[in-house]
Length: 442
Image 1 (spheres, rainbow, N blue to C red):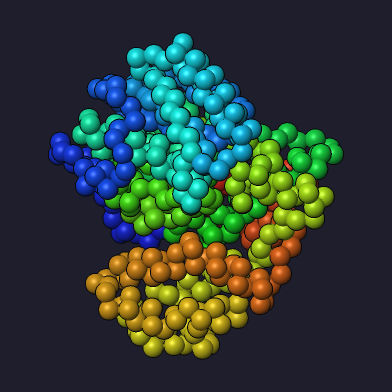
Image 2: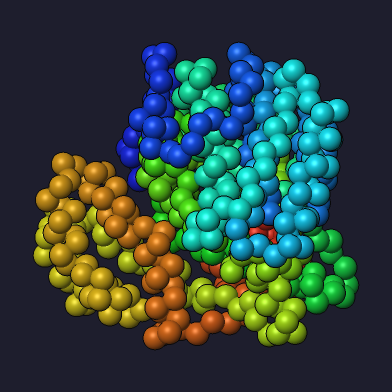
């Protein structure tokens, strides 16, 4: 699927530029020299980047990648083992041990068309150290590699040091971007490793609920026809080198870096879903980041199953009704006033007022030459960040958070999907099928 929810002529950037240093200006702003001195293979087309901090299972991820069917292009795997300057002695010891083991492993598994580079950067400044900074260092190095080859169309994939993948992962990446030459990036299909059983453990129930929440939110936004409704999972995305450079590279956020980064990429147009392979992120609890999968499961276990509620379906239904009202505002400026005072659902009225809706609609109209450019400008303002703010705001004022299965079943019903069973895993399976587009659109 490639951007099926987006307004039609959002356009796309050409990733096949004349031979040139496409990243020179960007790279000049980045600190330090290249980290890899060896010249890249002339056929390099794919680089997998892996940040690693306090990770005991790194070798499992490297083995998973090494067992993949090899694509036609050359592939590199860049592992960035790192820790902050104030890391504990135990964390530093674990990182050094991971580095030594991975370096030894890479020495016996690197091939001409599949090379593993294990980098170790200890004692990063405390204010910047974190997963965002680690991803940035690794992905910037990938840009340098492609820049040396004058290859702006090169693919940089995000992966994690506790993640596994299907054997067709590398070939699926290569094939997808060949099939969609104008796509700047893709969200890769993922599943947390959990099996269905009559009575799941509390940890298994937590990861089922968390993944269902993730899929429910994305499908809720697709139901509302929000154009940028894609998963933003750090271990399950890929981006072209030029797109990475155009949007200023990865940020340094200590968590949520994937969400912030990809929501800058989406407006380039033609972002896509890669559903022909599967990435398996870890579902274990973790204290390495303040939120995300590991932190949510840790909180779920600490609170003995009393967290992990989700949004009401009505919040997404209200968004759908609101978005339908926007296109006529291009030709009739008075429509915006009517929306704010009369037409907008109750959950949005005060939110729009607080976010200066009338001023913003006026500004967007003044800078739009066509209905499509007006819609593009609108969704640049009412973007993924504002969506999250709306969902949280509306659940403090109008709605209340509730068991994820309630909203999920309402969303399935709205799309005429019925389930023979309604246990959590069955509902999650239905949403996995939706994400892979197994169910036809209603």
